[in-house]
Amino acid sequence: MELDVKEKVKEEIDRQKKLLEKCAMNMGQVPEHLRAYQGKAFELMQKELRALEDQVKQLRG
Image 1 (tube, rainbow, N blue to C red):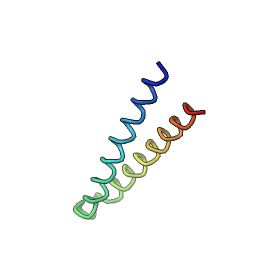
Image 2: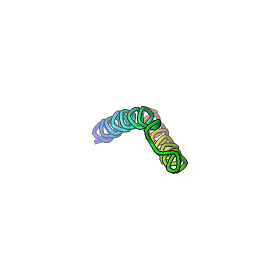
Image 3: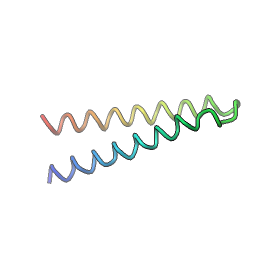
Image 4: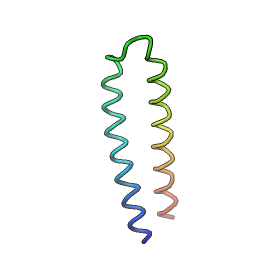
């Protein structure tokens, strides 16, 4: 069961990394008046990704 959880978390990490890459590439296309909000959303996504990566580390140990 633990292996299934670990695999699902890894899949979610991969999905979020791809999403963050796309967001970073598209940031230049965001209108100036929305960039602050988009930047905050990007930061929150990065925090969530780090939390998932920490979760995988804990499952290994």
